[in-house]
Image 1 (tube, helix red, strand yellow):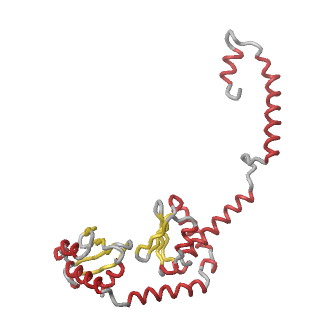
Image 2: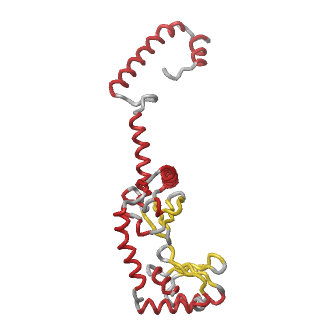
Length: 255
């Protein structure tokens, strides 16, 4: 069999009461070796099996090309080189800071395998699972040597302009009276406009508020105004869960 090693051969063929006809190995060994070689060679050549050393080099080159093309496709999906201000990744997500989120093609990212795309402030998080860190590295390598092909065509950039205009238009539109009342109540609970140092919408449903004096913040009044949860992440910095209207509410509090 394949398993008998040198020690087994000595113990069971040359030493002991059961050792006999050990010289057969010098006759049967070459015969079996020739049979094994002939059978395996025939099967490998007949079915073109990719045994070690016989890999398809064209396939390997194609894989390398595909990785480069994938990196370029990712860069373009995030709006091109000029739209990307920072590349980062965690275990499961690409975390890309972009200058204009409207130029990010979320549908294309999902078509490339992202299970979800989330906008957090001016950043875009694309969930690619364990591949995320490798994808970030591929993008970094590609951007080091890429030329104009790393930029979106002018037509695509122009197509994003109406979306930006729509966002600006909606931002300048009058607030819904009920939402305006909610904003006024939340602002009063925060201690008034003079107590608010900074406010911004994050993670689609939350407000990040920096207060000058947390003691002036009436959490009970904020919850009565519609805030679901208030959490102080660090002294003076609060996260308020307010739902889908976070961006509009943040704008109202800033104004």
